[in-house]
Image (cartoon, each protein chain N blue to C red):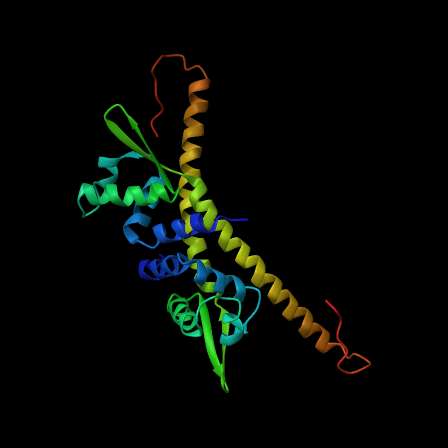
Length: 119
Length: 119
């Protein structure tokens, strides 16, 4: 059973293009905050705010080593979102399977009309 | 290349638990708006508003047949989100591969000390 609040936080965090760009950059390797912030056209303070949202949602982990804060991707956050999506896919695939079975049943003539299998 | 605004809209739409519950319900089969709204403890108008957000984000499709508006899952929306996540996974898996290769290189003794392969 997925934790609803945790899934909320992950999807809300990913709904912002700068935060997705941060996740994108970190998924290619860990970086210090200043190195991470370099390509973005926003203040360092704004990047730090986005990082806080990403950390609270479990998508990113930061740690301070000496005077440098290092940022890492936290695969668990994205896996949570991926799992939620995969569960829905299972749902609609089953739905398509039922539809397919129904169409197949229609193609084969059934002796007593309107007879239905109990499912 | 994914359309950033489209990805924004999908993740923002999925950041709400009621909208996710609607997607969940529709992934098990299409429903009329009133049937869809039944288990939710909110007004029909609120459900319709959520449906509008889901429709704009490409997660749900609705169509009016006679007097009934029917709601269907639109797999393309979830696929967009799944693709964005999968692309990040590729990034960090490559990153782990590099780390693994680096660790393997360290384990095999190299004749001249401190020699490094150019990558």
